[in-house]
Image (cartoon, rainbow, N blue to C red):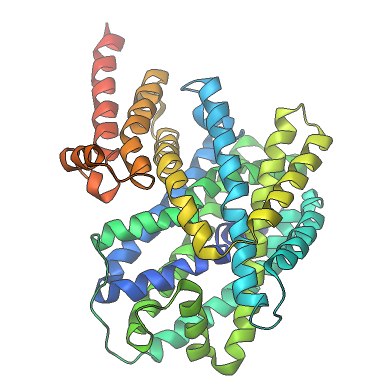
Length: 426
């Protein structure tokens, strides 16, 4: 096996899998609203949408198992429940969103058909690709990613050199860094890191004859390739959105802004290029995540191909049904679920990459429990507006920024390790 070629192919496939077009509409709009603070927003966004997913791949490189291995130290039951939550969220929110974005930006402007028809055809074609499991990484890495990157780089480079030179002031209500960090949740890339990393593990296992250390090297280096690509594209699109924010109305929507930027940078043919980009980027993400979900249930039921097929069919049916809703609605509905699952995902990723001596089973249990408890106000904040909830957020550090779990989790991590160290020395 040519490891360099494999690393590039897998790296490109990972990039395409993370970078769905649902994610593409987020950075320009974030930059548009941040104005001169775009670089701070980009720093926060890249942290949650690029660095955390990269660390998830590092965790996979170390564990080389399934998503269950990320939480088994806390409890096998917890790990199973957590994994099921991730897969349910993945197939009911971000995957249908890829169909909704495709309809609004690539189909509706040219063909005034129904969103139900779009999502039905979209997931019908996706199912065909999903059933070609053995060649999925090669298809994504060799053919689809280069086209996506080329179109995006054209928009970014031309956008940099054609900007008017002035920017409107920031419209963000939260601090720029925090706004970028939380908007990065909407990419689902941290969830994608632990989900799609499993796809890579299985794909490498199917190749056969690759040692544990070689797989570790391939996953790590492929992750770096994907992360570098994500960094360039995400930061570039945020910058372009900021540099051109005087040229659009404040009330513009995310899809409208992306369409407007493609028109300004690529001219009249920009809409055609954008349609191709949207279709490819959405499709690669949908296929990758559904394959990861089907792989998981196949492994859960003793390597049953029937379980793989049924899981893929269910995911596609859900995609058709939810994908007919508009993009904004799916984004809003997703917020409570993200506030619940993202903090736990982040701490699981971090606990699986730090030295083993600092991440015992007790540390896992304590940190995850505290993270869950202190994430509840963030979760409820998107569902209800109660005085008692606001009072809690006033007292809890960083709770106003929806990050109230960070300090308690850190303190518990340090505290449990300090208690354990003297006990180990006795």
